[in-house]
Each structure stands twice: as C-alpha cells, then as structure tokens.
Image 1 (cartoon, rainbow, N blue to C red):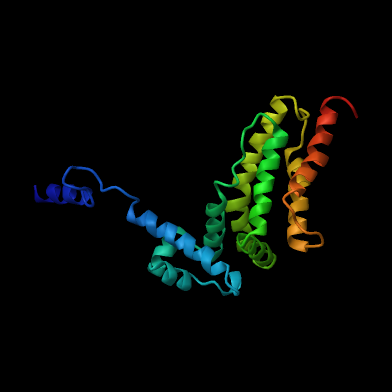
Image 2 (cartoon, rainbow, N blue to C red; image 1 turned 45 degrees about the vertical axis):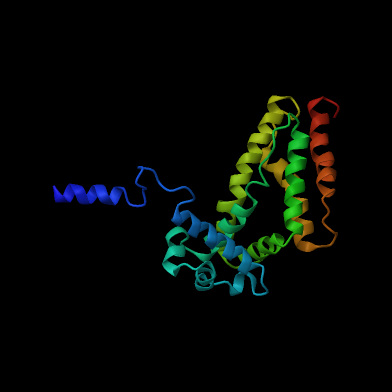
Length: 216
C-alpha cells in the first residue's frame, strides 16, 4: 500500500491541487532553450566555435554541464542545433502556388540570415567542418537535411503543377540554386545581396520552365 502511494505521489509531482500542471513551459524545456540561446550568444563573440566550450555555455545558461550533455553529446551537435533552432521558422518554405515564389522567398530569408550576426555562426561551422568531420556531419544532419527535405517537397509541388519537368533532378536543381549563395557568402568576391535570390531563380527556374513548355 505504501509503495503504491509513493508511486502516485511521484507521478503527481509538479501538479497543482486542482490536478493540473501549472501554466508555462516545463522547467527542462526552459533549460534547453536557455542553453541554445547561450550557445548562439557565445558563438558571436570573437573566439567563435574554436573557443566555445560546454563549460562556458553551461555557466552562461546557469545550468550544470551534465544538463547540456543530456541533450547534446558533442559541442558540434549543440552548435548545429542552436543555429537550426534559431532559423527554423524563418526558413520554412511557403506554399504560394508558385514554385518560383516559394523558392525565392525562402532563399531571400536565408541570405538575410547570412548577412546578420548569425551568419558568423554558419561561417564558423563550415570553416571548422573542413578539419572536423564531426562538425560538418552535425551541420548536415541537424540543419541542411531537414531543409533539403522541405525543398524536395516544394519542388515536387512544382512538378505536380507542371511548372518543372517531370524528370527533374532535385539535388541538381537545389545545388544550382543554393550553391551561388554559399559561394558569395564564403568567398566574398561579390557582395551577397537579397536581390541575388531573384536573379538565381530567374536563371535556374525560368530555364526549367522553358524546358517544361517545350521551348528548348
């Protein structure tokens, strides 16, 4: 009897007298969000990824180091998640009924992020990833691929509406669209402007549209 009562009390921990949990975000989720915010904050400082440490993040977020490791096994995973979470809502693809507009809007938002302080985080991940396989893998798994999958769906809608050829190579299209943005972002041979999104879409997507309409 006592054992059953103990289990019941444990199950109701954090529940008010009315049988409901108090309003607000669970404490563990608050800690997780605080860790992500602290990671972005520290990454924007001069040391960047190389100087970032789990200990520093934990101290800034006012949590224990073990709390950080509970969610992220490595610093690379933490950094990739911090950036991905900060950009997730902005980088959703709209569904306007036009593949051209959907891609252009998302690409414009991506350029805006690259031109902001968060662009330093991306640059640090990509630079560090050249000598750190763990970091580039975290970037691919936690940031690139989730958005790549959304982009596939956007392109498939374009195929379904007859805007793109039925035999479109989605990976080739996406590389042709986003490759120039990354090049200008990293090499800086030409200034990366938001208007560049429209220029790329005109070149790539309008070219595919002409092929669909049998003009080539």
